[in-house]
Image 1 (spheres, one colour):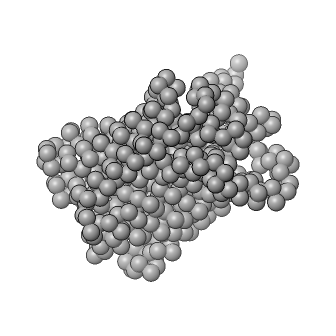
Image 2 (tube, rainbow, N blue to C red):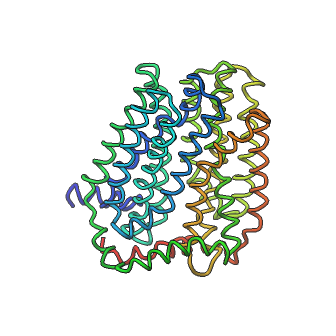
Image 3 (spheres, helix red, strand yellow):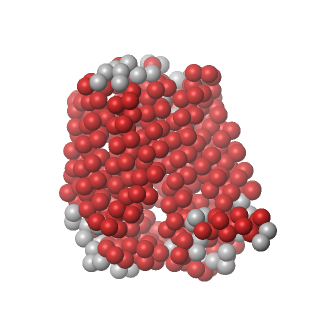
Length: 433
């Protein structure tokens, strides 16, 4: 066995499709670039004369375009292929980033910042989520679940972990704006690995399988009508929105709160990065826990109740132990861990329906996109009335409501998680790779 065969065999054993290995690396690096401003953009804008509400409104507009792009990425893959869709996402991302920095940030003019940052928001879902669809067709069905797990590992690891830590090191050296400029470099490097070094040819196969454009439209519409036909799917979509509300809401106002309690931007970014380092590893743990104690129990108690309580702890720790970075770091690890309690939701949702499992998953993806702007919108609407303390208690209450909703997501047989998930990606078996 030569070295290439040994490498491919090892990748296959750990669940990484050998033909897409470079693509995973590309997504990791691309998402690093997309995540460099996640933890500091809001306080940076506030320091430059904007209100918290204005910063929240900018992130809300960004979240809207993320939602739209997330919803349409799968349809575009079927229409023009994954590589072309990812290339489109890369081009849009680069255009939005360059215009946002050169025209928006340089002038600090919201009228310019809104459309340019919104354009940037279209980019990463078209790039990253199209690769997720690509994975579903290139992975053998018996390895699909693991391959998807690796996708979320590189997605979250790049955006939330490497992005945060990279910013924490670069900002003291080159400043905020220059740090954001590096996202252009990261995106280009990621694009190289995902689109050029990655030689998988799945798009030609897909074009042969799907030649009718009307079927694509019908599939998209089914992702809407299923919420009326299957109310539990709609409820699950709401739970998915709740899942990451703290992730999208906290960066708007918590960095400012932390700085008021003696933490520097670099310290906060390292704490934020640690939270997601914990999260990506606990995703694997709670997948196992969900199979043992039940998906609903895991999502409701660990995801809903656990995340709600640790959200409160994250807020009050700087008041209880001022300047104690170790205590705050431990709290961030716990919050990241409990956020991973929502992992079994991906197995639970397709199990709520007998057919149309793909449409049910599209609702889950829609919920993920919606959370990107619901969190900032919540801050923008409520911050002026109830302040940071009221916001944190509101977010905690929302997580408790989500835990209650989860208890109604009943399925007949929770032991069929692997089979149910594989039905979603069963078309992968048609792919010769």
